[in-house]
Amino acid sequence: MRRFTSNAVRRLAAAALTGAAVVLVAACDAGEPDLEFVGPDDGTVLAADDVAAAVWEVRSTDAVPETVGFALDGDPADGDTADGALRWTAGGLDDGDYVLSVQRSGPEADTDPEVLHEWRFALDTTPPEIELTSPESAVVAGEPVVVAGTTEPGATVTVAGQETTAGDDGAFEVELTDPPEGEITIAAVDAAGNASDQAFTLVTVPSRVEVEQIRGVHVTAYSWATPSFRERIMAMIDDGIINTVALTLKDEGGMVGWDSEVELAQASGAASGVYDLAAVVEELHAHGVHVTGRIVAFRDPMLGALALERGETDWLIQTPAGEPFTGRYGCCFTSFADPEVIEYNLALAEEAAAAGVDDILWDYIRRPDGPVENMVVPGVSPDADGATLEAAVVEFTRQADERLARYGVGHAASLYGIAADRPTQIAQDVPALAEHLDYVAPMIYPSHWGPGEYGVADPNRQPYDIITATLEVWKATTEGTRARVVPWLEDTRYRQWDRAHQVREQIRASRDQGIEEFLMWDPNVQYTPEAYDGVPRGREE
Image 1: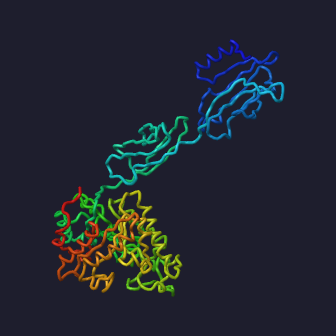
Image 2 (image 1 turned 90 degrees about the vertical axis):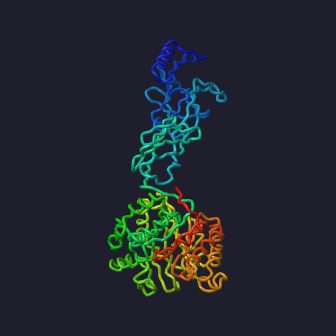
Image 3 (image 1 turned 60 degrees about the vertical axis):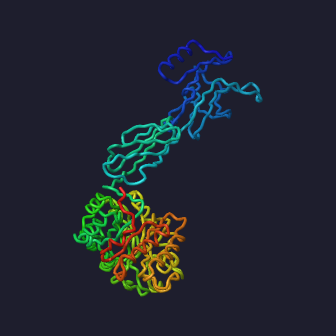
């Protein structure tokens, strides 16, 4: 029979008043000393920081009898003796619920031990995980931002100093009306007291214009910087003909249109300062225009010249004799497999994205045209059909997609028209590339196809037929991928005999294929506004 002394009652009352661990005193059988059971309160949940300090003890004015010991969930649990007390700690246990009991062995080996006292406790030593769901990418500077995510249900979450409680499903949400720039800390503390925190960098852009359907024209750096050209483009914008400007950020000569701070742009002399990129974005966004930034990646004679000056031959595609491969490209064609060349292009794209450019549109992400046996790409050993060259181009696109994701920009690439069904001719594996792109922009200009392509006798004189035939192939090739198809069409001098009609026919063919979007190409940036009378009017706000 167990009894509690008056001293024990007083100690229980004192413990209740002070919040200390409960102390129970039990008298054992005649001739055995009174025992005190000291430990955390019954039902305690121990966090990681609590485990080391948590001790359960059996105390006595005399030595604790050898017949008394601990059991955890009914199984014997070794304790240690110190200062006359029998102690047990919870080190090494997994998270979960437990019952620790004090037992006295019976006089016979097969007699069930007597339970003198027990504690119920739980271990919860796992810090709450934090997973962010918002913002997914960059936010517009000066606008409120919702920071949302999931963590352990009921946890207290603090975001940039603002506190909330996670719901039963672990979801939390905090709106920062004046979000700080740079790094923001999210902290979570669960019911047991376990804490974790996570820092993320809030990326901001000056402004953003989204459009559901791209209707755009190509613009060079110098044409935008020339008032007469720029005014014609702005007139097309004001008339609702286009909602997108595909501004060349880096051109076929390697020139960068703005005064880029990227080191290789400065060192190669490519950073021209022809236009102020931030000002261009601000002006176009003010007119509700989507800005697509076109970057000619690997056809880059300015970077090639710097590579030769520095002796960085691995930056360049080479001939089998080790000379720079020129083909019809002048100085050089840079390597899509070289880390420094890749980094240069990604740094330019990131700088443009930070300036508020809405899309990054790659061009010349390919090998030079011509027989593959006439070229060597350092770091790539192509097999007979050049498959590893395609893989290297895809890898560049994957890296770009990863690098640009936090800016929330659209990610796209201008691809050769033949690449849909002839990938090894130019090292562009369209289905693989399309997994890392929001849209592909096939260059399917009627003037670029030879007689008989896709069964069209004279593509240059049959724009509707050749656009229809090529888009059927491109739609089939990209089906089931991430990317949609936004074709490059042409409004060029090749259409001079009936230019407006020829442009209309290309747009009509695209629309009949269910594609309402287009990018229009003219290297001279002299478009034909009357050719777009069938295009939906009005800019998307």
